[in-house]
Length: 196
Ligand SMILES: [Fe+2]
Image (cartoon, rainbow, N blue to C red):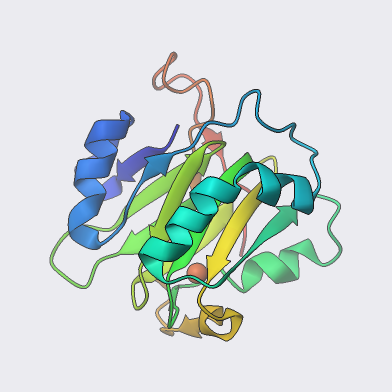
């Protein structure tokens, strides 16, 4: 289940309804799709896309997305750090960044254009999230350096990062709370991988 953190207010949100309501004014639609019993974590891209075809097709219709694929990041991916470094600096995209997390975890930081404070959204298995086109944001993996996600696109070129040049990401130590956080609030706070 996702977790929102607002560092400047020392505030954390971890129930799906509060998260949904909090994100809507930013144009972010949060949803949960079931995973357990539907696919196994090491299913192939084809198996994953086949299993979620009804949801993916409905989302394509709603959001005007044309294609979907599956990204699979593990600690063994060659040049993983170089890949992560592309997305851990503040940037925007010309189109929505849409992700459904099948396995693993990651953390998005959202930097609103309004006076609203910056916040992070930690996502994990079963979470569906979109970062709307034009929204300033960055992304980090958690310590396990693992994420498997369905991505939806209007066109893949639209997902090229446009960097803002702001070094703001350096001011935020990425924190992932991990699966035990909800039950042991404050006890387990796991530091995301350090990315310079
Ligand atoms: Fe992005």
